[in-house]
Structures are given as structure tokens and as C-alpha cells.
Image (tube, one colour):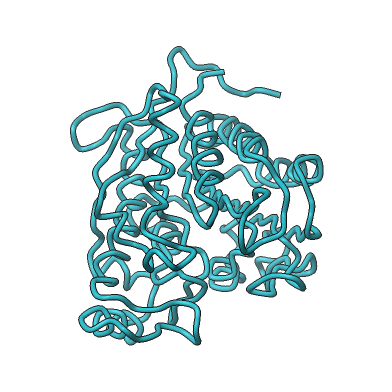
Length: 328
């Protein structure tokens, strides 16, 4: 069922610039600095209309501290000056300038939040939705990096939505192949953060979490939905399971929707085992776009998340942006 009744198309802010390309761990690392260019090239090739290109924005240290603790932020700042160290137990190296690069990722997500709440960007362009391709760093915890994620822009954005705009009910949906543990566990007892995550079974893939019985703690019981699927699952299985997420979000009646749309769930990713096509990402974005207009005045942000096959990144994220710019 479609819920959109729009007189014009949706203008979507898409963040692009070298400041975001700085967030990467070199050409030999799965999360290289070229990922944003793979996406942007595909978006331009397909001539997607109703995109407002936005320059990256940098967050402040104080922004990072709304989610992360000071000891960890200080560690990242120190490691950023010299590089060559690890920020966790082995997955996330520090490079020179990582502190500023991570703050650009957070800042661009925060700017997207501002745009969709205010309804326009700093230049006065009408903005309905936003997409930060390098955002969605869902493994970072309050006190440590994890899984290539230094600062958790999602967690910071949730805090900002509440503190700055008084938004209480937030739906976070994650279709990355990996479970969004840095969001789940940090908000596990939050009854107004409605968390839905479909991911490759944790028995086969990092971080080994996200089981169906993990539904929230205490007063938050029932506000979390984890859907692990077996390696090799494809579009048909995704669509079947996403119907549960649609019902979950619809019942939550959120004031804001955040979609983490990692492209590592597509067939051909070098470090995961799911077999989706970009049609899965388009389906998820279409469903959530409609629900955003039904419940929260269109307020939806898309975040790129993971993805290590460059063709998949371009295809999946471009389909998400196409959905967000559609008037259907």
C-alpha cells in the first residue's frame, strides 16, 4: 500500500566531497577511500533527478561526546596525530587525521538531520530527505571503535534528534549484512528507540550478535526486532522478512526514521555471504519512504554503512537515493 500524497517530487540532500573520502583505511583495506567515488559515479551516470549535492559538514568534539565517552574521544584524537595504532582489538586502525575524518562523517549525518527537520539546507534549497553515503558506522561503541567504525554517527544523531528537536520516537532500520551492535546494545533499554535489523546469522559473521530473542531489556522489551538470515539468502527471503519490519515500524509510529543500508548484503561482497540484489535496497527504501510520509512528515535519513564490492555500492545506494527522490 502506498501512503504518499505529494504534489511534487522529494528533494534529497546527498553528501559528497573529499572530506568524506578521507574516511577509509587505504587501498588495500576493504573499507578504502574510493567507496564514495564508486557511489557518486553511478549516481551521476544514472542522472538521478531531485538530488541536492551537499558539501560534507564537520561535527564538533562536543557532538561526539553526546554519545561517546571522553576517554575514548581523547584516545582517537591522540591516535589521529601519529597514526599507526589500533583503536580496538584488531579491526580498526588509526591513520593520521582519523579524528577529523570521523567527525566529518558524524557532521554530515547531523547536517542531514537538520535539513530534514527544518525542511531546507543552509542555501535555502527545499530538502525532504537526506543521504550520507559514508555514514552508518553502526559498530562503534561509546568507549571503543569496532568493525571499521570509529565514531557512531547514528548514536550521535539519535541523541541530537532528542536534545535539539525534542524527537522522542525514532525508528532505526539496518539492512547491512552485519548486525548493528553499536546501536542495539547502547539503546537496548531505551523504549523509544525502535530497532529493526535484518542481517546474516551471527553464527557465521562478525559481530556474532543479533539473535531473535534479543528484543530489548526492561521497559524496552519488544521495541527491538532482530532477524538473522542464513548465508546465501536472496531477495525473496529479504522481501518476506522485511514485511515484518514494515509492520514493526508502522506500529511504532515514529517521528523520525533512520535507514542504514549497507551494501555488503549484496551478492559478490568479498567478506559476507548474502545474495541480495540492489532490488532489496530499493524495496526497503520504498517501504520506509512511504512510512516516513505516513508517520513523520517525511523525515527519513539514509546512511551508506558497509559494502566492499564497488559495483554493489554504486548499485544499492543509487537505488536508495532513487527511492527517496521519487514521488510515486
